Structures are given as structure tokens and as C-alpha cells.
Image (cartoon, rainbow, N blue to C red; front, side, top):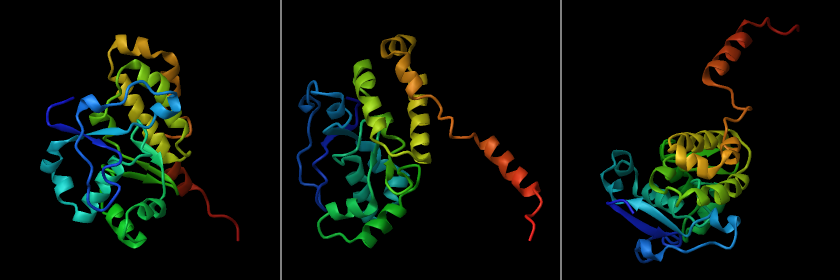
Length: 212
């Protein structure tokens, strides 16, 4: 466990004020019964330097709570993403209304919370602080976690972040993980590059207007 980190249970921020105990790394569960269970961890690492982070400190109290709620949510997968809607999440916080939750969520920068479509939510920096526990965790849990995420451009961005994480691994780790994971987390063919998008927009601008 890195210095300056604590491990929070996903049940800690289930109410408006956290009431659960801070857990040590010894409390981590052992082997899971299945990959489906393994793709959602009961424990999350929270770097205590979050209280030095300028973006986090600039958030309102409601937004801070929402971010910590998302980070420790029971449905957040090992990829730092989940299928969720603002209405459903708001209903989980006692005493909160959807407008209150929506205002707090919308005020969090996209670099901290990635939203897309009707039911996609991800934390872009999740893997930086919650790395998988070895190649087996990636090989078994990552495909199941990815399969639970709805298809959208946000999922494409998630795949690219995961692939960047894999590409930074040592050759030994990549060999232990296997080529199947690398193929599963290759760049989505449905996601054009920024240059391609710009070229397509320019071509559309050059097209003659449709006949009346």
C-alpha cells in the first residue's frame, strides 16, 4: 500500500456523512469465487494527499461528498467505471434530491469524473491509485468489468485509458497477462482519432447544401 493512502470500504459513504471504519490493507478479501465478483472490489485506496489537491479543494462540500461517494460506490468496477444514472445514485443518498445531486455532480471536472450517455460513469485516475493485484486480477476481472459497461464513447475512452496502463507495464507482466487482454483493450475501431474527426468536419463544411 503506497504511503499516504488509506483503504476505504465501498460501504463507508453510503450515507451523507461517512460512518464506516478506516480499514487496513490486511482487511482485503482473498480470492473471489468468480471473475464477476472480482471485477467489483469491496475496498478502495484513497490517497490522503487528496486534501492537498487544488481541484478537489475547489469543489463544494456537496461535490466533495459526491466524488468520495462515487469512489467508494459498491458498483464501481476494478476499472474505475460503472453503469449508473444520476437519478439512481441520488436515491442512494438519504435526504438528497436529484437536483442537489445533479448540481454537485455537474460541478466536478471531467478530469475527475467522466460522464457519457444515459448510464456511463468513470473515474479517469482510478487505476493510478487502485492498481490490480497482479496479472491474474487483470486476466480474470478486467474482461468481466468491461463487459458490464454500456457501449458509448465514454467506454471507448475507458478502453484507451486501460490500454495506456497496460502499455506501461513491463514485458514480464505483459507476458503473464497474455495477448487476449491486449486484444480486448485495443483501440476501439469505432472511435476515430481527433485528426480524423477534424477532417470529417471540414469535409462536411465543404459539401454543397442539400437541394430545396
